[in-house]
Amino acid sequence: MRRDTPLNTMTTRLTVCSVAALALVPVLGFAQSYPTRPVRLIATLAPGSAVDILARLVGDPMSRTLGQTVIVDNRPGAGGLVATETVQRAAPDGYTLLIGGASHVINPVLQPKIAYDPIKDFAPVINLASSPNVLIVSNALPVNSVKELVALARKRPGELLFSSGGTGTSQHMAAELFGLLAGVKIGHVPFKGGPQGVQAVLAGEVAMMFPNIPNAIGLAKAGKVRMLAVTTPKRLSWWPELPTIDESGVKGYEVIAWFGVFAPAGTPEAIVERLNAEANKAIALPAVREALVAQGYEVIGGSSREFAGFVRNELDKWTKVVKATGAKAE
Image (cartoon, rainbow, N blue to C red):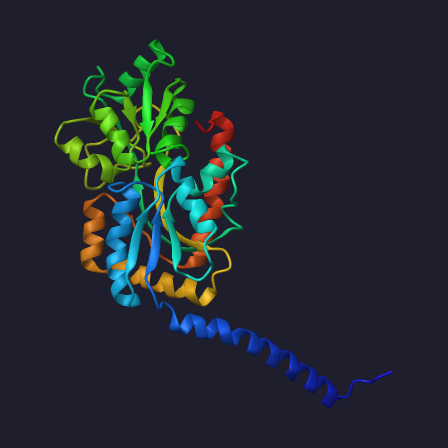
């Protein structure tokens, strides 16, 4: 029987360390040279959506600091499912990224048979920004407040329809939660993106919607749709006259849309951290921050680990909401 001596033990340790170091060489070398070609940032919603606006505001400065073009590639459909599964199948090399929001964790709850796991199949990169949703109604609807809307919905159960940017989006779940807490039944009409859903309200095709502020602020200020309330727990500092849904009588109501970047699972940590650093730099630029705030976003940023914890909490939150509302994929 071989007996370990101090020399044998030291030799063994050196060998193990050497093997580990050699295994890291390709990864570190790849990360140091990254990127050597354009990076695709695949957006879950259509051009003009809140996701798309944010992707383009952040993608441009990231192109400069990365030294390669960041191409925004819109893949709308199925409430973000098309884009998400595209990135899930992509090589974990940092060249195909996803920018999306709450649908990332809501879709797997609404559709248990879908092909991706929001935690295991993705590497969270950064939580870029959040944006409150707002409750808008068609000018043809005879209501001027949340209380009047609830009263009308109770008189006409199931007759009022709401639009969304797709099944599983924050716009969809904001309406489902509203119906649950207000005790009313409203029907869902999903579209391929927020702008299309807002246009349906504008045209009077549906009664209401809970769009992200960037998709509704212009029409609301122009008086083309009626904005009744904001989904945040507190009023907006830059629009203080707009009440919250909670204070309007639907107690406990709160929905805030968020938008983050993900890479496929298995992407080298060094690349994830490089992307996180460059994205943080982009949203810290005064011009970018001002543009985001003007569109109704709140800049977040932070580490990839913080974002990972946030995503897990969001999955838990929306799992409970879906079970409570009985919401289903259309």
